[in-house]
Length: 369
Ligand SMILES: N[C@@H](CCC(=O)N[C@@H](CS)C(=O)NCC(=O)O)C(=O)O
View 1 (cartoon, helix red, strand yellow):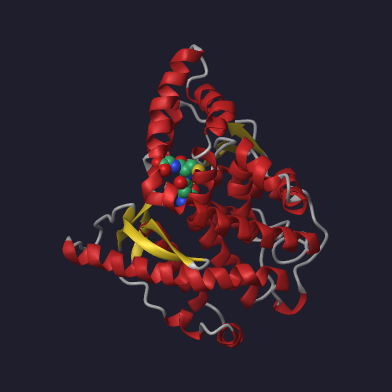
View 2 (cartoon, helix red, strand yellow):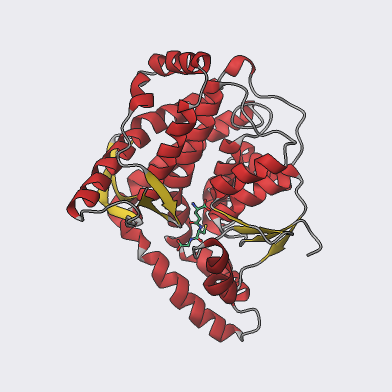
């Protein structure tokens, strides 16, 4: 292998976009490998235990998967340029934002791609076919891709909630987020100041792979928001920065509307997901080592002045538990500073929230420790 890493991921993949943005910013020496049918069915599961992208292999033959873990591991090996936050509040915000994007932006990315046929017709069918079966004739590629993607993705509609009766609410919610981001990026280079943190790479995933690439959302949502679009483009270039995060562990005022949305919508949704997961564990008498389903039954999540119905991911509970453990390791001074800030937002008890049975990651799902 000539390069230090081989990166398995498609341009169209949300989580590959996130990892690629990180690798570009770090200036890591890697080569892209577009994933073929053989890779997705055999190579990747053999080495990572899951049929998902992205995956990364290094010269020594070590494999990395699951973007938070992949980035955590690479951070130990590639210290500069730093993506660390400067204080406990920024760290809390960056990690919470990271968890929220990796969960709540999946329905946005799927809806904008799969509810508007031009995306599939103009890009994803052709590109997916070429990646999966580079040597097959086009009509065979199209047939297989239609079978593999179209039907599969449309089956996520109900689960992720982008069904006709919810689209108006869902799009109003997403557009409000985009407007907040557009205002934010008219004042700041990155989410927490003048250099990126994990929050930026998380958001970059859906923004690059879906919203600024698929024709419908690019035309309707990103082209009219030039500051947000410029941020996507520089994140993709891995543009080097000489700036800093806001001083004194401050959070930009222009980002606060999104933080408040996360706290008032996503945290209660996570609490309901924990309750539902606990029900699943009880009903099925699951014990240590047993796997949980990837998603729960349809639950309700507050969105603007409505309620949005979608299934929840058990993996996300594992992510919240991981987040809580990270916070538990804060020094007493950092904890005190975070608690003062959380109290000012009315959620001081976040640190003591009960996220149920301890879980571990199991591919794209969670399992009982
Ligand atoms: N938590 C994983 C998510 C990876 C993921 O869901 N990747 C998508 C592509 S963007 C995938 O391969 N999905 C396959 C599937 O859902 O079965 C990560 O951060 O790497």
